[in-house]
Image 1 (cartoon, rainbow, N blue to C red):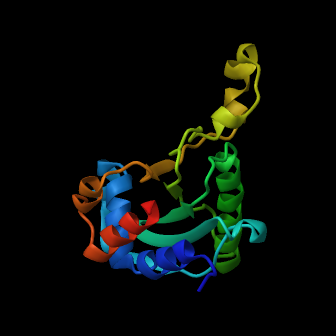
Image 2: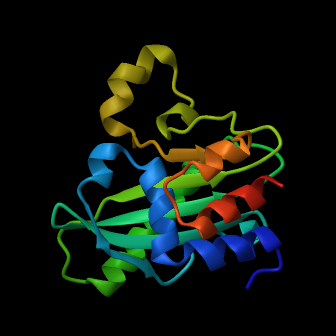
Length: 187
C-alpha cells in the first residue's frame, strides 16, 4: 500500500472490478457502457505513473471486451491541491508506456487496442484546466488547420468530485464501497 491514505483507499476499492465498474459506468459515454461486456472487466498489472508523481497520482489499468474487441480503460486518480495544466501531455506519455507494455506482451500484434483515459479528480478548487491534448499545444491560430492532421489528438474523461454533494455521490449507480470511497476523497 501507499503512504498516502487517498492512494491506499483508491487502490483498495477501485482495483476490484465490481467497484471500478460503477465509476467507469458513470464516466464513460453511454454508447460505450452499453457495449462493454462487464463480465470481462479485469485489472491488469503495473503502474504507468512517473515515480516522482506517485505522491499525487495513482493509476489502474483495466481491460474489457467492447463489441468483441479489447479496450484498455486507464483510470488515473489525481489528487492535488492545484490543477496541473499538462495532465493531457502526462496521459499521452502514460498511454505510450501502456502500448509499449502491450507490445512486449503481444509481440506479433499489428494493431494497438484503444485506451480510454479517465481522470478521477478532487481538489479544493475543482478541475479548471483543459481535458484535450490538442489544447495544450502552442500552435499559432493561423496554422492550426494546416497542422491538425499531423498533431496527436485525444481527450480524457474527467470525473471531478471536488464539489459533488453527498447526495450526488450517493445517487451514483455504484457499489456502496465505491460511493464511500468517493465521499472520502472529498474530505
